[in-house]
Image (cartoon, rainbow, N blue to C red; front, side, top):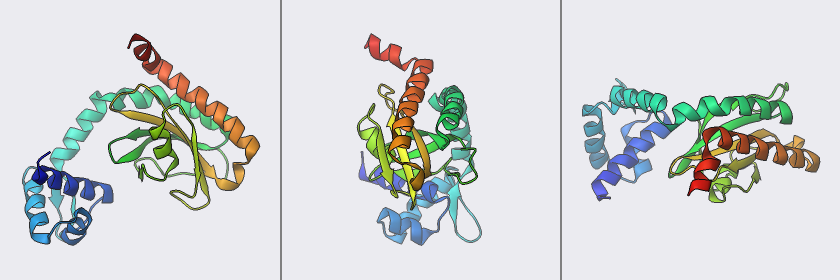
Length: 217
């Protein structure tokens, strides 16, 4: 990839990951001089991929939002989320914890759907959030699809996540995470969650036809 294109993409991802940032923050995060960063940001703004408010904060622009909506409806996520949601609901009921569907890109994982725990004390609020692949349960799960991973305190203190990535999904990595207060993940709970998590991922893969594609290959 040409270096200039990589810089533009770094800036675009920086702005989107932050939800909005000014020139100084974007340049610092992308390791660019403010002059270079401003040139690239202005180019993205001119094409509608970013927009800038009166305070100088860059955020997602109309072109990017239009493309994103189109891809979400017609692309893999458009089918993945409705297929997975009933299985997330069943998994949350079986484990008593909040459950999330995760999609992976090259650098991070994004929580795209959820089924909340019915308990008074529960984990909420990760839909739309990106988490790093390094050091997280879901990152470890994506490194070894088909093998469950568990981490405590990797993203939030006193929170445990158990994740399992689905093999055979191609460029769109797919995983399911069970997330809740760390004190509830004792040995017995981990064993029960592990079995339920495997069952949910297998059921989603079956409904998506992933097993059939793997067998055909």
